[in-house]
Length: 209
Image 1 (cartoon, one colour):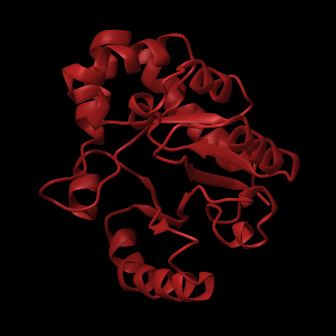
Image 2: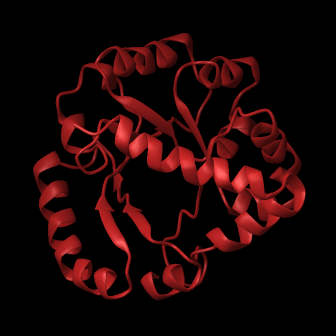
């Protein structure tokens, strides 16, 4: 996957293994993540990729008060990749996100495209987007006709700000950032890509601890 990402022009890569608070002990997760990081960080360097650690944290009850999140943020920052629940959201869920913001943690909402089908009231997604969070879209959402139009609109109206690859392997979920970027460039222009790249760097600097 590092080889593929390097070929696609990636120079900074954030590794975000899934963290499920209901099924994992934080200490075990962090130990396993560090061990995995040490296995690949030198190779990433050979590919001229700066590899950062993070986690894709699945939403859980009282997440806004959790003390474990400081260890789950992206390396040396207060940025947290947050996966919202795959169910109908409630106002209480959004209040948990507000609590994170009040604590100084900046949520990046992972793959917003996957949650629309769970909401009978799509307005609650708009309520989340209107909060001072960052919205991320997976490249695969721009490669499917089912979701492409909606996601392009989110980028066009600046309601979505980041594009991710969500790569897990080289078969069913391979690195595909370049393909997603090509769609954005074709539909919305080179300026859109520049804004995404600039924002990514700005976030890492702004929320550096």
